[in-house]
Length: 287
Image (cartoon, rainbow, N blue to C red):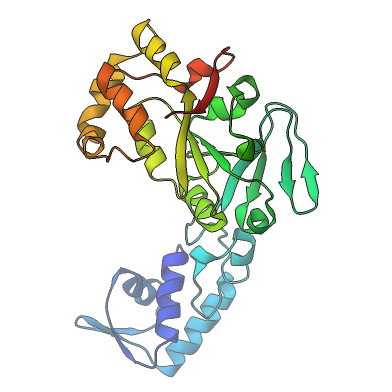
């Protein structure tokens, strides 16, 4: 007979109630049929004081707590105090974690500390533990992991007050998570620059970022050259337009993403940001 988290939670629900009658469901039917605890009459199952004591002993024998717990809000190691299954309750293992690094030749600035990292390295950090210690004036959120990993091979030209940004990867299924990044940015309330593909999906990502003040890319003249001389991909534009185009068409001219959108729309083409790795051009705030 298999005893699992679903059955344990059904028993905990019964024990948390003073009622003696419950509607039969799959888990309670298993409890009656497999463990002879409770009595089914019609569509209801009844539990006596003796049944309740048997349920407590069953939970104890299987390593479960008597009380219900919000497993999704607990770390895996904490769950072991209430269930033998550390994975029960789901939830992200890497909750609240963000991937961060400095620009090439710079440091991560935390309180009175500076952290230097070799190229192709970053910190995987719980943002709730570092957010209030940051001494950076702004954040650069990088769309693609390769660009984040090789950020030291990209040249940037930023205004003096933004010369020492914290670089943050926007996240994927394996490295960091977008929901954690968005919560982090919301909390620190710093100016945010998006370093994304020059495509419709990239602009859509940028527009979701709290505190967004601009998009970083080669300047307008260089982008025009890349659009016109073989670097651009029209297939990306036409593949992405049905998804993002209608909403981008409504973007106000005053929006900081509009200059890039205007170029993409003009050329009906897109440029992936990997092209700017090891390039001689500088990436700056596109205006």
